[in-house]
Length: 619
Image (cartoon, rainbow, N blue to C red):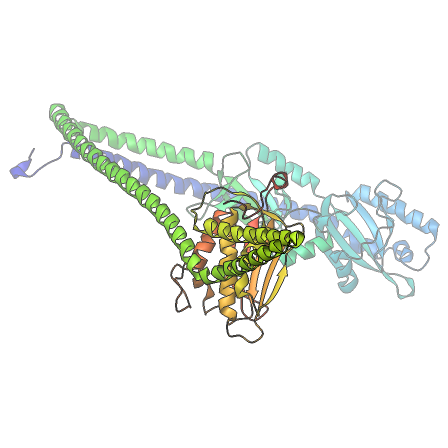
């Protein structure tokens, strides 16, 4: 669709222009009305603030001169002296009670130089101040040092907040004291609270630290307008100014325009307010008023917006009817059809992409599963190959171990034949029995070789760790000649979960590495220790050889070796065997000066140890 001279024109343009005009008129009128209403509200709030300050100052002035008059009273000056007469104390108590009733003071009391209250208007009543020491209070210290003092605090005896006005008293004999008048503002707070409940302004009084002393909202008392430093909090606690009040921030937050604030009270919705404050003459306090603006200002703003919007809207409505309804409907239907086609195309393309991604993901999962299965198979083959390779490393030792009993068998057999010929049958029988024992020895060695060559069964049975160590030492016994071997195995031996022949392979590998490390060392020593630590059994193999290479963690990497003829698989396979048994294998420095290998294995449950087979018994 084109307009004048073929230029494209949107059918919604008149409506957009009309809507923009209505919104602009409404916003402008609303802002103008809001500023005018806020100005009126501010003038009214300033007048209210001045009245509140004047009323509060009048209430304070009623009590302000009372401490000065009492400080010059002869009887009051007499009671702060040494050992006052009890009759005098009684008269002073009665007079203070009468003065408190006549002036409206909450309580009047006299304090000696040491801070002890000796007379009070509430003497003889429950919660009397007489006998209480107030020397820690700042208003007492200020009056003794400067002649007068004041402090707003929570009463330590009464538990009620109030303003303490103090004056120094010059007693006989150079002694001094302090007369204190406590003023409570319950009446003023009650009036503020009634006005606040009827929709009036929120009123509160704060000290220079921003702590709320009095407020029309009871929950704000002893709150704070700004965070109180930790050091100041400590001083407040020491002086018992506000009891255990947490001095939490009052729920007043700046609004977006910077001149108003938002007040939030728990579950109640936040409300806008106009904040004003002024100094209270004769004090360091400030009186704050928070005047609600939600109703008055919103009403003026909405009225102006409605009037302006209606006027401009009616003016634009006639212009909007110029645009043909039929033409707008046709364009809208065409646009909807185009969006539907576009959406269908995007859904189709997205579906194809997701299908292809799903296919690739399935293929990747299958490939990773095949790779994992292949990795596990190769790991098992590598472990088995390492076991077979380990056989070659101690074949000479095993051959020596087998040759010795074979030579002894030959000798015993020859002797037995000669003894039989000579009819010395008992001695021949002993020789034949020795032949049997040596045959069992050879059979045990061959069982160990078959156990090393056999693939892992995957079973984890209770195995006596001490038996594993002793059987492993038998395999390398031929290489232990001339070696100082320190063996420490507790009795009974701890049982661990694992596969006996595979654990023997680990121990044999560690001991053979130690034997290789001490080769050529003067006074070679190897220590094999077994002990129990908590729920685990610990096997340590240490030596006094050359120690681990720099960066000793790599000794467990496959194909890493420091031996000229080594394969670099022994420790990698050993760590795999230990981890399959649920344990750990680590390396470090030995106290002997060489390397120390530490195997930790979980102990077998006590219920299964009784039926455990001896290690190395399997063929």
